[in-house]
Figure 1 (cartoon, rainbow, N blue to C red):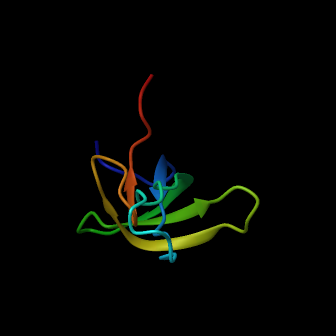
Figure 2: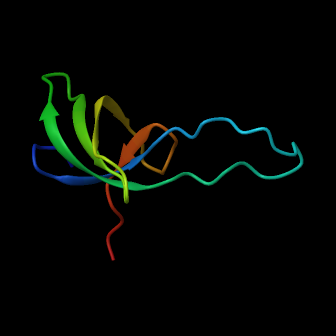
Length: 79
């Protein structure tokens, strides 16, 4: 699918590194709802990210990923 303005997507923000026991697994990838608010000719998109209980922010030129990956957006799963 091609992203268009007004579509809802999932955004997975980058998580700041935390000093933890190196034997533990990495932190899970977060998922926030986001609205596509801009699309460039090259297919790069601008998102309005809507985190719960926080102010929305813009993410410029987010990259697409087929699976949830830190710093990327994905299409919501279909039921």
